[in-house]
Picture 1 (tube, one colour):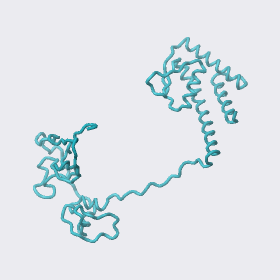
Picture 2: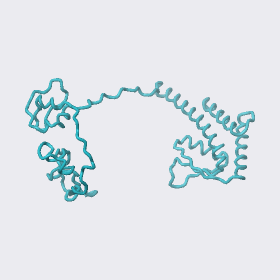
Picture 3: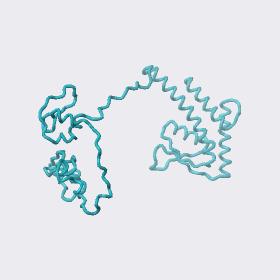
Picture 4: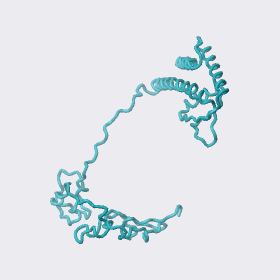
Amino acid sequence: MLPLEGTLLEKLRKIEALHGTTVDGEREAARRAAERIRARLAELRGSEQDTELHYSLPDPWKRKLFLALCRRYGLKPLRQAGRRYSTVQLRAPRAFQEQTLWPEFLALSEELHAHLDELTTRVIREAIDEDISEPTEQAPPKALPAVIPYIAWLTSGAARSTATTAARPPASPWPWICPDGTEPDAGSLAQATPTEENQTQLIATSIPQFITPLTTLSGTRVDGTAGVAVDMQEFQQQVLPPQFYPATGPFAAGTYLWGYDVNGGGPSWPGRTIESRARR
């Protein structure tokens, strides 16, 4: 027997003795403690009905300890078919389970965990490596800037005008390339600088109800059993009622959206539905 194992057995016997009696001598104290606890269980059963309690013990070591402790006192733990492997069902007087069995299990479990941790640590240090410290904490990677210049330019009004070729900004790490392959001029880049603008608040009660038909999915289904070509495109569509859009200007045709063009049918919102079946 290992010295550590012997020490653990002594402590477990002492814990059981504390929950039963105070007779001197570890083995004798543990034996008499178990007898006294069994006698207390029989006494409680004479005045109190058994109650079935369910215990969740996912840790296999703690579950083995709990099962052994139950059987030591003549109890029969069970698990109904279909329940989780970590579940233990036990029928016994509630007072015995809550005041004797469970407190003793917690004390034994804490002692067993401490010794198993000590034994595991010692074995790993002797057989694998002395250093078992936690990994070194490293600072998180640097985040991207709050506003990417190209995205800021792309979402500005200048992105939708014809850009002229200009020299690339020398200190910029970003690809200042327009969707048509050209580069924005200095004036377009200046307009891309984020600025605060006063926006007109949209009052919901000012929108007439039950006038503009809702957009439906009618006629937007695509046969997915054949080849499907999908492209992502930016487009404009009137999402709000028509009276909220100006007669002229960049938003006359509607709100700017991104959507999918499926089989050349053009992007839309809501998007098209591709119908297919498994293994077809």
